[in-house]
Image (cartoon, rainbow, N blue to C red):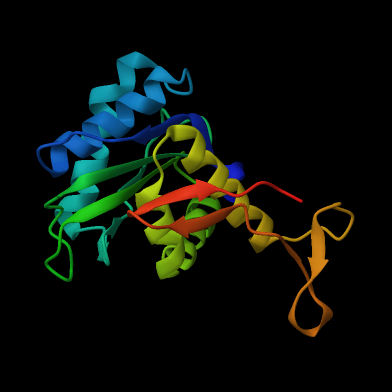
Length: 192
């Protein structure tokens, strides 16, 4: 599964300003409602569903990443929102640290396999420290979207792409679009 299969492009937030876990969840659900993917009248019920899941145990994995999620009958398809905050939020992380990267995932009831695949995709990608560092360094929503696209390209490489190049062992890999730069930010690298 690719990020583009479930992350709603209009529900990506950079510079999230949230006081606590509940505020993060409210803002992420609001981003999905604002994108037009969810009915405004369902916002409170969806926030409650995610908070009910959080009551079972924090979805903050540690290393600055959380994946709050829930299944709800009002959700038409598996979808997600992404947010990054420089300040971090106390999300009751397993490692006790502040959380800076949030992937909210919502799915319809009865779509557990897709929900699980999306959770696995997020968890797998966020184990990559370089990816997480670059995500935190993104200065704009467009940079976040571009980094997610890059992660998708690395996850599933198509050999017919003009920018695919032989990597180690002759395996085709896309050329990186992002590179870390001094000063804690990332810069888009021109494609060649």
